[in-house]
Length: 287
Image (tube, rainbow, N blue to C red):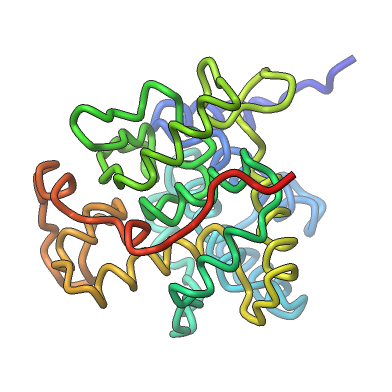
């Protein structure tokens, strides 16, 4: 028998659903609030600002990463400000200051070595698409065959970060690779489906493929799908692409914390050459 959901938890779920928070964000917020409650052994609506502060101190002492700490902060700010309606509390729950680290970026030669070290046709094509269009891992696995618009030369990204759609350029070489992949794999709906066809490929599959390929290629840097996204943006910038175009291609709201958001039409995306077109890479792994 499934465990009954408390009225407080149900209310928080409804609040998040009404605000169109993604399922992943909802799970993360619920987990954070539950962890907060368990730490004190009391219902979270009976805990106050000093309890939040003590919980943050505890999390820091455990060595939690700053992104995970800030995710907890977001969850608690939402819980107090929205679900409990205590508007004065959220602004007093401090975020952790993010360390100013430069992102890991691969050179063009390392991108080739890395991608060619991926033995699976499906995962190699998916990771190639991530680099060619600067996609987040969730955006890669969420691609459908219908999202590839070869006539307009764009890829439609549905429900990106913040639930927003956008268009990115469809590299000529990526289109060739995708056509080769489609001819061999024939995906009916999802571009990169699970083996049983029940849905899109799991994000964990791509993460595992990155770890294996990094080791096989002999690359000392940490390589994730997001590393390919960082490399995409850096290589475009190095090749002289306007930073405002890169901003739109990546789906960022702001150019910087103080810069005004600038929209660029999809025609700019179509005219922008993907850095993949400068590389010589084989899509089909050898037998």
